[in-house]
Image 1 (tube, rainbow, N blue to C red):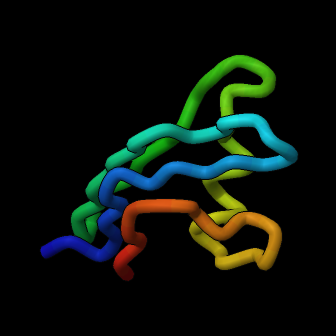
Image 2: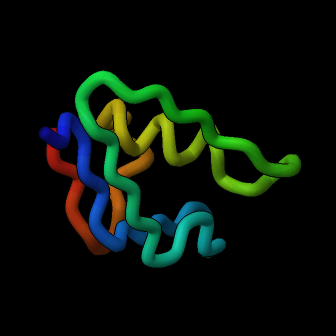
Length: 64
């Protein structure tokens, strides 16, 4: 059973594309981590998942 599904979200901040068509599926009982270099969008993804007001995706869906 999926507890989180992210379908093709795109996020732009200050006229810069931060995330483009990102999709993730997390199943119940699993552990995931997100790795990447500086400015890869890891924190921005977290803020979008939490629903922070400045981080609303321009397209796609986040389903808990």
